[in-house]
Image (cartoon, rainbow, N blue to C red; front, side, top):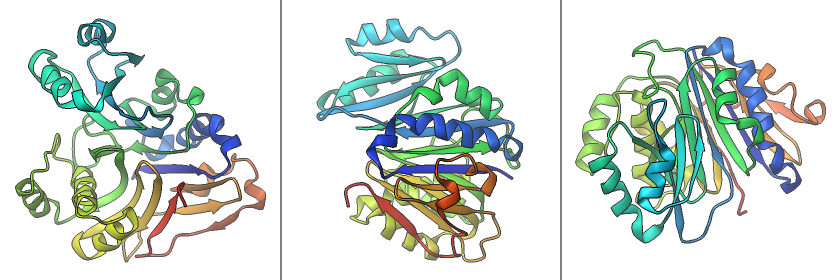
Amino acid sequence: MCGIVGLFIKDPQLEPELGSLLSTMLGVMCDRGPDSAGFAIYGEGSPGSVKLTLRGPEGTDFAGLAAGLGLPATIRDTHAVLTVPVGQEAAVRASLAASASGIAVVGAGERMEIYKEVGLPTQVAKRFGLERMAGTHAIGHTRMATESAVTTDGAHPFSTGADQCLVHNGSLSNHRGLRRRLEREGLAFATDNDSEVAAAYLTSRMRTGDTLGQALEHSLDDLDGFYTFVVGTESGFGVLRDPIACKPAVMAETQSYVAFGSEYRALADLPGIAQARVWEPEPAKVYFWNRLQ
């Protein structure tokens, strides 16, 4: 049993409150996933630059690391976000792999930042300062480990492509065969988690030209198991439940936002929720919003 939340802002005046609202939503889901938590937030980006979100052991000298690379960094506890010119990304990744032992790149993109750690969701949100973050959309996850150890590597979201990430409640039965196929395509995996395979599957589909909505449609044929996905891209926010839809889910939409929660109580404190259109997403139906539309 895990908890998923997501928030897609339609009214720009609400963007400064994105982190505060998501932090409350994550906190409500503590009992659905008390062992670890994580979130991805889509904030401001710089054209021609990519954000690399790094995770390291407690006490990592991120300031010294960034200075050695000659790059600006935003440091938040065990994570840091480097702003890297696009043309230097490969060289920076190679340098990190060669000389920064224990440092993992957990996400990359023009606008996406990812943070995740072991601990109660309220504590994870607080240590990274989620309530002070702004942006256009965000997704989050509270984890109750059932098939793997409680580690930060196993925490969601999972990201396998630029500005793409996924949170998942459920279990995939064909992830090992799918992983082998995706590895032959050149996709790399950092964990044995089935949710990372789902993220990589969507990355693979979008690399061939699918929109997020189309990739989610194809997943209905290619993914077996029980799942509810909430997915983010640079401009989009998508939701999908498997054809049986045994995992709980509820959505709400107003003129200002679209919200997702594993349970309604995750949405109860959102502004204007009393006037929102609230519904349970249908099985095997893709829901997708794009900020550029």
